[in-house]
Length: 512
Image 1 (cartoon, helix red, strand yellow):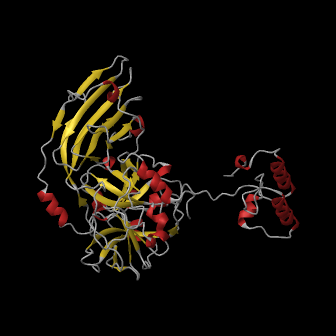
Image 2 (cartoon, one colour; image 1 turned 180 degrees about the vertical axis):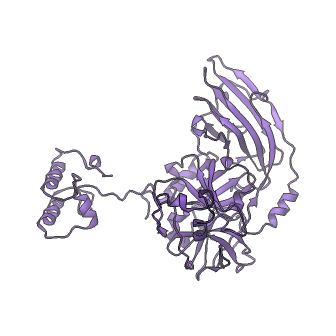
């Protein structure tokens, strides 16, 4: 279903927001008003020789994580490094600058992160033009880790301010991701191949919901794609499907970063907003194998996805029939979101995987883990391996079969069913969920004109007299007192609404 807020308007808003924000709580670094930048210690890292990794990345096949950076191990703790300063009001500020020469961006992984109540962490550059934060106690996780999205440039200053009497600060930067590729989307040219289709082009319109489910994954120094997936309780548990080979060697899932809505607003644009990210996840299930398995991983995102991201939870099918006219939505080479089409059907590659040959668009490194949708807009697999490219249009790609992942292995840690069907309903297909779409009726409005008046009373009377059979909507909208039947008591309730002597519809049981 189409959402109430047009996606285009939302993306315009997103582009006007701070470009490098993630799930944070705003504000300005306290030092900006009261302290000078002189004297802040600088940790200069040894710039890695990226040539080897760039060569490796250029030879990466579809179905493998895309390397965009090098992870440099550090051990930075405010108790041992940086500058602490006391302010007259009793608050304290800690600052440290990290410099990795030549980096396009710097990402930080925190082995330990426990911000006390009232404490705030900011990241910023020398001019404060780019600022991320505040990260607060609301970003604390039970497992104690944290990570930031790539921060532009090769220098970043960390700042923590603590209020008087605040609890202990636990903070350890364990590694820095030195990006040797520009993955923040400010190039004047696309990163991916010439034959890819922006999701903002007309061919993407029928897939508007599923497009909102797809995220770009920062997995340490690697990139993949993933897709939010619904479960039979429809309780917006933040499950995200990707490939096992994406998470296998990418470090702790607690320091993964997920970027939503990184997509163009116009068909031929190469830009997209980068400010819709959340940090951290828990691995719930995986195949724990790449080739002799469906190659899947199910992550549960740890930070709540804000409503402003307009995320969608895609539906799925565990049917074994060949997927008709499959579609892939993904981030090739870490680029803005693209969509690919096969106008025929997938075939069996082997016991665990589908085989897809694209007719329009392809996949590339970075597309790994992206979902394969069937013609009914339901997920049937995730990208595992392949050989397609713009120079090899008909090279086949292999997707792990969702129906094989459903019962793969012997425990909940190796199969999907325990998570996507927790009540064991045994359904084979399940539709997607738009958590912001409200399809509940306006109680008392039986003709659906958004006005409650005498015309609605006439409809209720005709239903009571048996002159008309109520639609499903009318049966719910006309039962104002929630007793399961439409009778004279409901007429009284509608009349009272019209006369203004009864509570408004939005306070009635079940009304929107």
